[in-house]
Amino acid sequence: MNQSPKKLAELYRHTLLDNVIPFWENYSIDNEYGGYFTCLDRDGSVYDTDKFTWLQARQVWTFSKLYNHVERRPNWLEVAKKGYRFLKQNGCDEKGNWYFSCNRQGEPLVQPYNIFSDCFAALGFHEYSQATGDEEARNIAVQTYRNIHDRQDNPKGKYEKSVPGTRPLKGFALPMMLSVLNLEMEDILESEQVEQSFERCTQEVMEVFWDPERKVMHEYVLEDGTFSDSYEGRLVNPGHGIEAMWFIMEIARRRSDQELIERAVDITLDLLELGWDQQYGGIYYFLDSDGHPPLQLEWTQKLWWVHLETLISLSKGYLFTGREECMEWYEKIHDYSWSHFSDEEHGEWFGYLNRRGERYTSLKGSKWKGCFHVPRAMYECWQTFEALDQQDR
Image 1 (cartoon, rainbow, N blue to C red):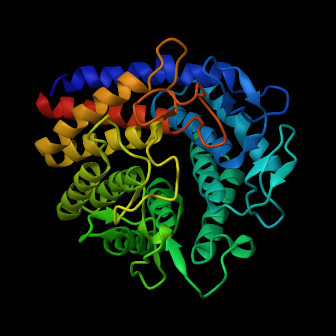
Image 2 (image 1 turned 90 degrees about the vertical axis):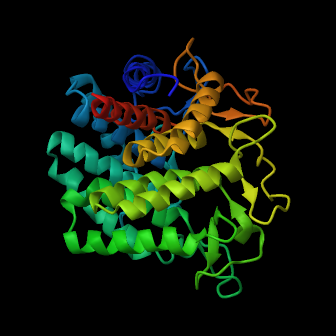
């Protein structure tokens, strides 16, 4: 290991508390209408005021999480409250389905077609209820979780564009997301439902979407779990699969299932072998499982969240197994990520690089990038390296 666990823990702690969180505190708060601005340029200047439900909820989760697990700072709880109140008032329709976006004032812009708005609303409201004891926040989180389960077999509902029956696909993202929802919310859910959901999610991620012959995690498979020889069926997002593996590791740790942890580490390493750009470094955004040209023209881009989630998976993999391959890969990803994405001058991390590792855009936040992946990774890696430091003593 190039740096000691103690030094790495301090790097992540310092970056989280003194660099990343101040950026969002200083620039994202909408003191007039509530909620947060997420379309922020490099220096924190706002370039668009639309509010995207999943990013609003992610920021509620982030500041509530800090308040609950790092330090009970009143200013962090106040930031979380800004987003909670905005979402409670404006975020969903009369049936409890969460809009994709609103304008600055809170008027809905995009219908509730995206179930991940609901997923992050449940996460954010649950964590906020843990910070405040707010019973209404807790009830909304539980009801939203139930709505997600009711929709999981047809997540887009009436907004689904595909013709039923011709090529019936199911996606990897929802069982992956339900894995972390169960981990985060199990203290307020019925234990039998949580266990059943854990079992279903683990089985789907590890047995249905993971393809041991191709050594890829498919983003889509046919409804019967078989391979679809199509653009969608061949689509691979290495970062998505790697992120899911640290969720699986945490489920396995909860169950004292060392064999499952080892399998999750194996898959992490296989996906890195597939996704690493041997010429320029960094992890590809998309690939085709059979080596054909991907449909996504941005497939060669290097994204912040892909690398951050990989740092989490590798550090946890090393903590749980001690396997040297995890630390070898960790150091490679660490060196690339910190030298390319981190912005020491203005704070936070850049989001998008081209294949050569050159900055593609100056943004720090957008419709897709908000106050979530960077702070969560800083927190998770901080805690993991502190645990490794304790092991070394």
